[in-house]
Figure: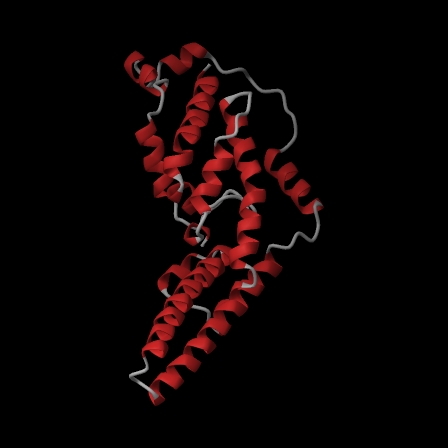
Length: 229
């Protein structure tokens, strides 16, 4: 939705050009965190109350079209109808994208647009995702991980008798991932997926890749080097 705003890319670039010191991943996290406030202001300025604004845009379009039917040759009404139609379509697309992002439901992409069932599922998901008791997490992982026990150490000579990586394969596993590989993976993630409910979606990284791509790649490559060592 935000990429349709007038100053979206300008907002992203201005924040992204700020300088931070630290590891590559730290810099990426700080830039993303710093970008949230400007984007919230952008959202408030252009998409505040998007659902009601979409309804009002549709009502205004119907009003203009009604007047135009009574006076079809009126040039002023024709121009107003063109503007009203364009404004409604933009708001409707933005509203639909907003609901897709909010719902986190894959089937929205299939075309179920703003129905009663859509909103009922949205409500049920919010109720289902509510955390009732933290103890449930603790009990689950205690059962999953079990308790400490004395075990026999792994014998390296036994392991070597099985199938192991060749030196060439071992070297390949340590090869640094390329920018092209990172971009391919990032662009393969569905656009409404994100690390959390208040995090940047895959669509943000796709649309802003020309600005944020190098920083993302640097952070991933730097993390993979640390992991290998």
